[in-house]
Image (cartoon, rainbow, N blue to C red; front, side, top):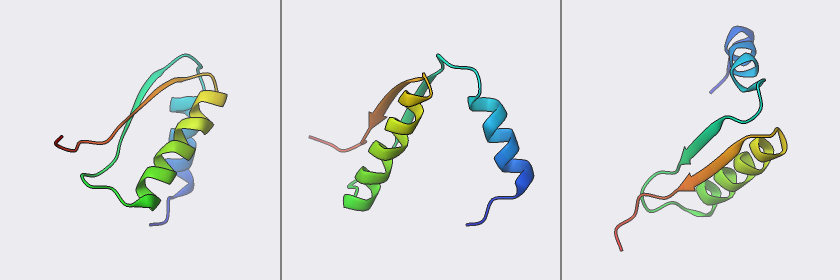
Length: 60
């Protein structure tokens, strides 16, 4: 998927103010790529000053 310059700029503006509460939700029964990318994205957002929670919607 390719993002347009407008969408990237909109995302930058949305994430610019620090201290946002963000939830990252992976798909059900995630593979290693889904878990890894969720955790990596969470770390980037935390370093930007956001409070991040990752959720994997699996049944126990």
